[in-house]
Image (cartoon, rainbow, N blue to C red; front, side, top):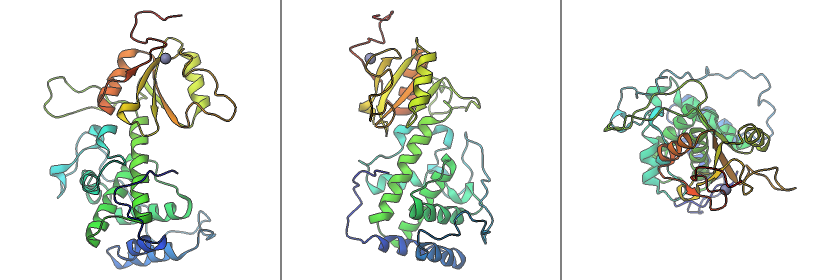
Length: 299
Ligand SMILES: [Zn+2]
């Protein structure tokens, strides 16, 4: 995975240095021992997925309410999953202070019964295969734990440690962008509030999925598409009709429609623009070719 240049990646550490230090300073003797073993083990270790029983049980998510945060030391700065928006997740222009503050908006200790085991397994998978957790709760728990670790060291993440943190943040942006769309908050609400719908919302997000995107377009010829870069940078959003030749049709050989750019789709214009405003915090740009705001298609 490409990880953009980062403010706190000072390049002075070798590949193994930060991770080894990370792993060997995990609080708690058991996790320290496991983490050291994880770092020392070569990537080709055959025990991966080969039926070896973990010595600690699978971590369990204890708090599942997306609309409220659990009580605890970090509750005052909590952002429940239901209130999380893509534009609230730091991108590669952010400082470590901003990232650290964001990490603490999810109290991994309160959400999970064994966040250190969860984080240790995640680092192990990242080190071996650049694989990351695939749920919002897991990714946020890992970010929380990384903040606690680096705070304990009194340092900012560097080298691979920093790459791992940025990869977690990018993954989180993708997961938040692709999840079921929350309902709009009340217009007069002082704090952003939302209730999750359990069925897939009207907005679909396609990334690295040309087949899915083209199938959606072919069945929603009256729909609308926002073309955006992979990380959903606010100034990258461009609104099109689904039929616009700028974004439609199979990609040319060797190219993709959903590789470098994400396609966010909805059957109706209002849902898609609401999504842009709620999740990204901006109105999308408007294609000058297909004029999506005009009452009828240019044909
Ligand atoms: Zn267009």
